[in-house]
Amino acid sequence: MKSKLKIALLATIPIPVVIILYVFLFTFTLQGKVVDKYSGKPLGNIGIPLSVRTITTDKNGNYSISFARKGFSFKVSKKDYETKKVVLNSNSPANINLRPTTLAGKVIDAYTKQPIENVQITYGEQEVKTDHKGSYKLSDVPEKINLAIQAPSKKYETLEAKIIDTAKKDFRINLKPPKALEYITSLSQAKQYG
Image (cartoon, rainbow, N blue to C red; front, top):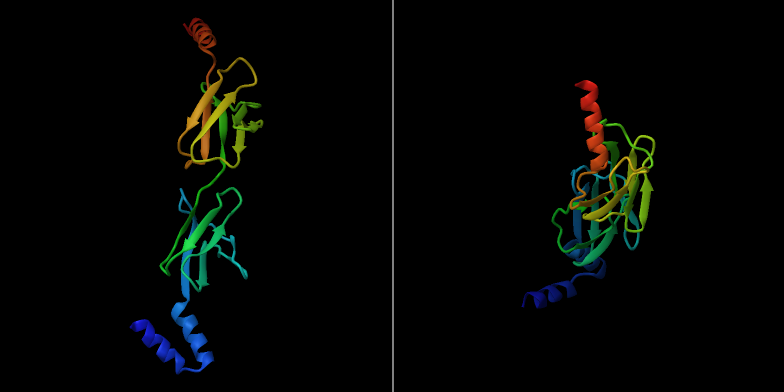
């Protein structure tokens, strides 16, 4: 009954007014913020491509989108973050959480705490080596990841690392010498100091 009444009322209103009323009554405005999923920090200056134009978040990650129907969707992406499809179903505030897709850190000697250069870190087909500061960076990683860590010499053990939550962006890897070398080193130090 209500829909018949709306149609009857609209039939008596001039067309330009009907269009304005339609836009006013059936257009939703969505406001929200794009943030880092783990840190909650705002992600500014992200372009959000829409069918007609692109809107950009401000430096604080805020955005505002007007859309004419429920189910309207768009994608949000930023370098070193996942791409996320957003489907709008209401005009309630919507924060968009983007998960970082990089994993970075340092590889150091477990005892001396010195960085280790040229350590090979492998994830799937991706392979990187640490620089002179022991630093590494992997891209496009999922939330759970298995790493193979191979030192440039036999002075250190090879590691398999399973990371089940990449929320932490800085992963420090401590490499130890193989058990036999570790034993000889401790005997040598004991003799030297004792």
